[in-house]
Amino acid sequence: VRSVAFSPDGQQVVSGSNDETIRVWNAKTGNLIGNPLLGHSYYVLSVSFSSNGQYIVSGSRDNTVRIWDTKNCTQIMKLGGHTHWVTSVKFSLDNERIISGSDDKTIRIWNAKTGELIGNPLQGHNDWVNSVAFSPDGNLIFSGSDDETVRIWDAKTGAAVGNSLPGHEGRVHAVGFSPDGAYIASGSDDRTIRLWDAQTGVAIGNPFLDHEGTIYSVAFSPGGHQIVSGSYDKTVRIW
Image (cartoon, rainbow, N blue to C red; front, side, top):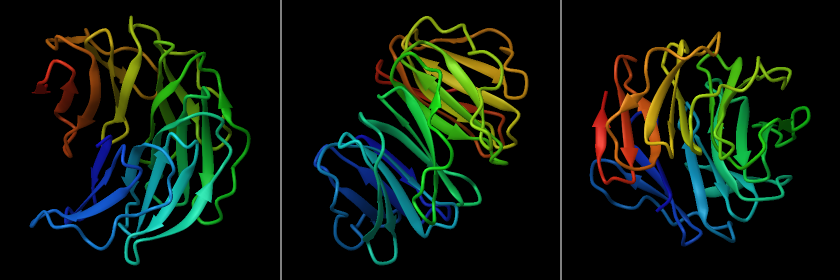
């Protein structure tokens, strides 16, 4: 199982797997809801709910992004364009757009209703893009890459905001915005978590040090006062 996410109301969980399926589960009982969602032809690497819980977006090693209806458990659209694995997908908070990051070193913005690509692919990373995230207001996109950098993008124009954010000394696997959009957290192969000012790109304080392995996932608490991280060292830590 490569990726999991709660629905906004906390009633359901979606999972994406190496078995090429997506499954939706009842979060209280653990029972499978409906049939597995079938369509991808290779590992499913990323899944995410829309903010209204009506849709799921998925990214796969089959190089596609797909949108699914949670009520009918059916595929609505298949978005093609990436030339390598799609590693990270997210809806904007207003559900109007989807972003996808790929091992083709690009980020793409899609119209969630039509499936059309919005503008040109965002280019600037020199290696695989592992993680992407929208700011809560939908104005910024944040990405982490195997090129050991974090980048901020203007979601409307697709232009890079400032230079890449240096500091990590290993591949960046995870990025996440605070609920108020003020801060960004990133986790890396260098076993550190770094906190950034989302508007200026300036690093805040010292790196968070304690993990003994690659950090694959980071997330803010709903209040924004804590960060949770998951690592190859087999631990989950709260900061």
